[in-house]
Image (cartoon, rainbow, N blue to C red; front, side, top):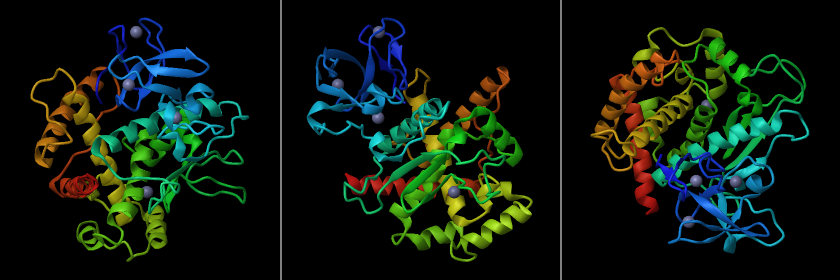
Length: 355
Ligand SMILES: [Zn+2]
Ligand SMILES: [Zn+2]
Ligand SMILES: [Zn+2]
Ligand SMILES: [Zn+2]
């Protein structure tokens, strides 16, 4: 993540809508590809506060009205009479029921996580698109809650609608309960997971999406050689087996998480998420004053993995000094790194094809 500045010179974050130093409004300028001071010209019309850019901007509907976004669109791209939705919000098919207390705050957290994840996709130049774009595997999101409150997040306990966090045919569904810190932490502990975050959910589910976009019908045999055959056993059998027996002892030598042992698709999605973790952490370091950092967009995989390992030791110590859980809890064995490197080569190849 780059460091962004307000026109007053203060450092501002990717999530900010206002500069805490001078009170200026902030927003993502798609022309600068940065968080910028945005100047209100009246009538919901803005322009980018960067003198060299000064692009006329319209705030995303989910920014101006719902306060869950902080992105702007070039005013020229806004269709009259329709809600102006930014490049990321336009993928939302279903948003939480805002008449329910607390749902707006949950949605805000979900959008914050989503923007961070998309930032990395755009940094890497990954291909994605909607049905309107004519994209082969159209991406969309459903953010919704269970119709009835349920005690468990992960399996159906009644005949009422239960929302599963998951991916199917380009549609990523997030159960908005995952935006409830208490519920999510309970689930993390009960599953024995090192981390459970909204960002992690998006990275994992988008791993399934990019499997459909980049692997399916293209390089499935290479993927099978490394991750195993996704058709044997089939997903349903594998799922049942995993929930009955759990992961095999010793899984840590070749899987990034216990859940990755469930099925080759889950192993791929977990490895994909681990790669995005690596890229975003190394990217923060690259734009920091730390010495000897590598650019995750350019570096070869070995250099990036090395840097991530060194940063991991440092950041784990930092977290421990504050009593927090480890930032990089996993041990990256050669077998695990081989899978993550597969993702690296796959995504680099996709970027090369797109440019
Ligand atoms: Zn400022
Ligand atoms: Zn600009
Ligand atoms: Zn938006
Ligand atoms: Zn999955």
